Image 1 (cartoon, rainbow, N blue to C red):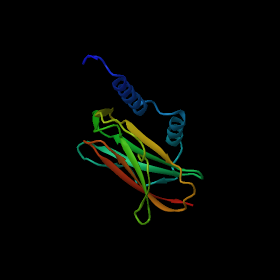
Image 2: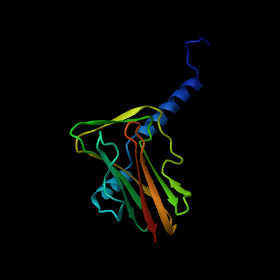
Image 3: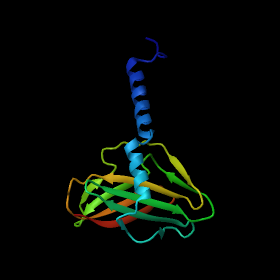
Image 4: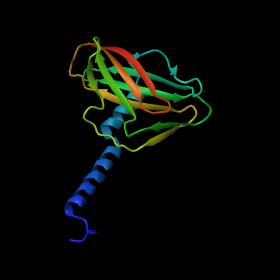
Length: 170
């Protein structure tokens, strides 16, 4: 066997890597897109404070919204460019955001990224003047009654954002 020919195992590994990359970067499912669209049009059950500006030079404002329903909790992190210029958000990998739910004692109950894979490629996102970007996810709480806090994070390296909101699951 010559050194220039590819072994079947090398071909299989290359195909598996390409498939994993396509899966990680693929489009959102119809149910995720519908959930995001529904959350964007409905008023939230709880809005923790008003928009906050994180960096006076950039005027990047953010807020987290929580909507408690009988079968789950919807979270939305809204980030708005309040400048007259475009802002480029830089991400170190494929995970652009995170939602973590902690109980009243501070113990982590749920993490959106658990058991998910993300690409290791750098990426960026242009946010136009006045544009709002929404990162929304859903926690299926299975009737875990109690008081909780969601910690929503935008994982960009140049304008990191973290918001918190308290909520109750009845």
